[in-house]
Amino acid sequence: MPSAVERYKALLSGMLARYFPRTTAYLRTEREAAAAQAKPRSRSKKAGARSAKPRARKTADTKPKPASTGIYPATLMPVAAAQVQAMRERVAEAVRAGVVSAPSDEQWAMILGRAPLTRIFAGAGSGKSTTLVLRVVFMLCHLGIEPGRLTVISFTNASCAQLREQLLKVLGFWGFPFDAAQARKCVRTFHSAMGTLAKEVLGNPAWFEQLDEPAAEGELDNPLLSGRLRPAQQRLLKQVYQDAYAKDPAFRERVHRLLDLPPPPEEAKGKPKAPLDGFALAGEFAALPLFEAFYVQAGFMESIGLRPGRIVAQALSCSPRERCFVEALALFWQRFETRLTEQGLTTFNGAFQRLTDTLEDGGRVPAEALRPLSHLLIDEFQDISPQIVLWLQAVHRRLVREKEKVSLMAIGDDWQSIYGWRGSSPELFMDFDRHFPSKGKRKSAVLLLETNYRSIEPVIRDAEAVLDGVAFKQAKTSKAFKAMQPGDHGVKLVPRFDLKARLPELLAEIDAQCEHVAAKGSAERTAVLLLSRRNEPLQQIQAQLKKALPVKGYTIHRAKGLQAEVAIIVDDCMPPEKHPLRNALYAHSGFFRNSYDQAMADEALRLAYVAITRGVSRVLWFTAKVQGATQVLAQRGR
Image 1: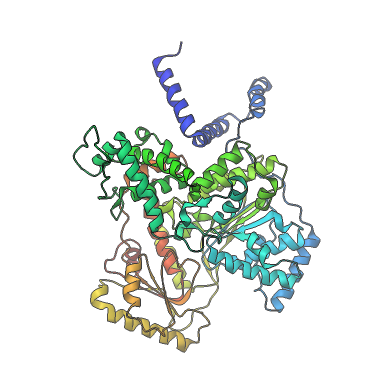
Image 2: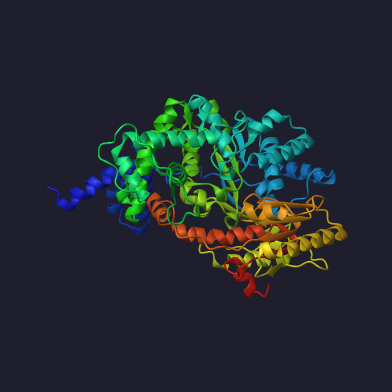
């Protein structure tokens, strides 16, 4: 008879398996893999025979296979020497015609790669977009892959539009029949690709994220760049919150605890009105109504692969206040999901979850709906989330079960990962083979695009210096392609800068930099890029700028992928606040080796790297307080 401890372990294990099936399978697989590695390499034949039987039983298991079971073939893609030669010759003609720039050796390695699973570290300014387009051209025109079996994933609708334009231009030079409609199907965001699949599998749902949106019929864009909730979304969340408060005593009691209000009466009279006081968890900058706070944290939970309505608060390592918040959130979220179903709505996260479950459980998914995702080329891979990883795994496993050939080329740069606050993590790119395993012992091919065609050497070295404090990163060094010209420089630091008191000084500096760029005869489309983490400083500066100046202002997040002859950064590098709840959720998800706090500390430095590498030949940084990245720069004598 099992002991009390054994019974408790079995009970706890069963509960976790019910609530977190994929996480449980994931951790179980990790233990099995570790146990296999720990076994002695040399065994007697007798011992080997004894261990063969359990393995045979496991292969006959009909349950969905955990993530470490190989997805991608161990064999290389068939590529003939004649196909490679034809591609090289046609590219040479395109270069002479001015259609593309001549690829470097490291870019050719990406264009002509044979591995079905490839990870490419593409540094800032490495020319990855043109290289990605040429890779697609090679696959379509020379390897004979059908356009209907290939999809390029880019980060936003804007970046997709640029890639489509390039692809149409280059394929036109090749004489390959490919029109704008095909380009729209071929190049899309994750959410657009998911939305197309959802139409076939989930009955063409309406989207909560598109309530009140005029262009709701267009392509689904990446919500990472979205702003505050729109009025229709707030109304629906508020209705659910009010309903839960009026009808659920347990929810009502937790709301009062969270808002430090007196306990509510046990018997509510009539329909009690829910309090709308502002609430902020430790680590959050702004207080929000509870229904908005629930939505924000639930979105983060879903992004890292958790289900908000199923989380057991007592399983989290955090304070009673955070646990109370999670308990209230779970009650709220169950009602929110019910309300969405009643109104024929779903969220982007909810659709990813339902599609993943359907694919894993063998539910009906039309083969023609999945086929375009057979060969995937994914840009900005460092900014994907565990939820996207689970969906990609499910898509390619299902295609493999249906005897389709699959391949995955992931292009990213962990140094430019800046969306951890929304659930993304460069760890998924760093631990790529763990999440996207090949069959047998084969690992993904790893390529480096290390040449920076954008920035001069001092800019690159200053940018790399701020990453010294990042705890978890891929070791690499960028090589500058551009030669320095007289007057060029790396980062010049302007400390003790008070924007209110010294705005005229900054405006004069912007004027001077525009004059410098004009005198230089720069070919850059933008003379000066004005950058900050927040919109408020940008708005304050732009309100006083001369309208005719060739200056563009962006938050650093929105400036990713852009460049200018001169980058001017106005930011104080405020250190991130500690976030106990997200630390607990990070640990609970089973995906990360870092804590959330460490991930945010690293991300603050990566954000500085992204800002600096927008500049081609000059960077100026105005800061009130020297700290974080600017402290590193000050120590370098900047």
